[in-house]
Length: 322
Image (cartoon, rainbow, N blue to C red; front, side, top):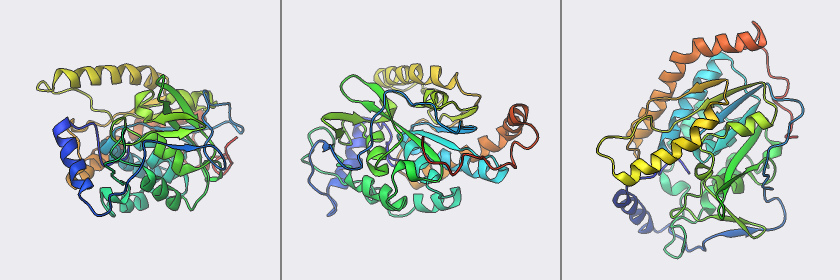
């Protein structure tokens, strides 16, 4: 989902969305937009092996406002000279990952993250029967940010994970309209309208693969760095419904991160929300955690690729998606 809303308790969620609905920017919309022709992204059941073979993949997980931790991680990787040549993202990870794949660095992403507020990407509508947020503004925001380029034309190769709504199975976008792909990956059930492509609806990648490491593995990646921004623990005073939700989510996450060569998992506050203070704190914790783990990461990269693991520019960094 986009970085301004997490799975808040119902009262907080209603309060946030009611405030958005009262804005003059509120627009009517339908439950889903069905893309059939043109540059709509093609959903794939499996990611094909890519050529050239990716050297380092960075997998950015879902997590709503916790996704601001990704910005801190990206800053540390850039400073250390770590050069992922494949980005895989789910939900907020897809949003940040697609922008990073387009050539925006962590500093620029940090600037963008504090411009405009939620209504920069939210277009709430009281007429949507399966989501209070229409999603068109997020789609347009992404396409402007990547200069209208489709996924396959971005400087770094990128995979966007989504969920097929009818059976909750994961699907992957490697080509086509970047804005539509990110919009679908962030279509949180009940809040953001699902996206229809050729008569099939797609929703939040978090519903199937919160941290889609399997996509990087299927692509043939030699070394996978995964970033899990889910809360590490559920508070003792959390409701039984929230506990069950977290348990199910961990069951989706654990098999994925087990396939990574290196895992970053910042310790973030459980109760997330669309507050600047939370964004700043999450980014700082992501950066601090990445700096703490950086020596171990560099040793792991050197063991795999030799002493030039950091300095060498990835040969496939500018290659189109295969």
